[in-house]
Image (cartoon, rainbow, N blue to C red; front, top):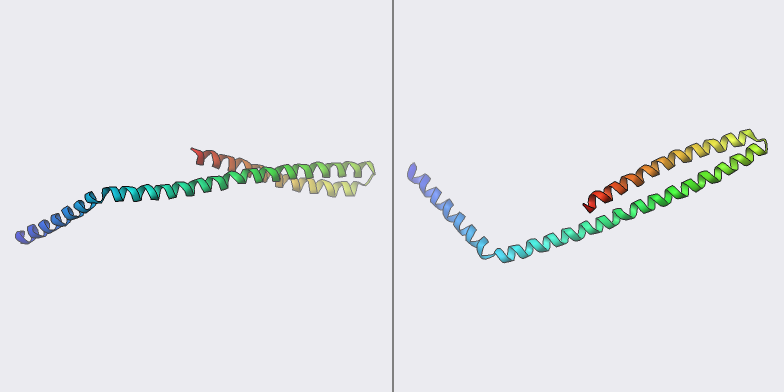
Length: 122
């Protein structure tokens, strides 16, 4: 039994040596391929970063647009109150509240995207 196990160990050792010899003889080729693979991954990461960097800008534009809408509706509410139309002013106030809730969500997204960009840049 020990002879068979030693023979098996010798065969495994020979296979290991052959494998190491192949790796050693192809070391430059393997290194070149690993560099190419790393370059592809780096390019993908840069593209992903560029995509994510565009998102905070778009979200910020939505925030600015939402803030402008809130200001516009506030003017409508003031005009309705001045005209004595409290029902219309109340409806406009409800719309303003809805817009402000949406605006808070957009602001949170801007902050999250900015944090993501900062993390990816590291």
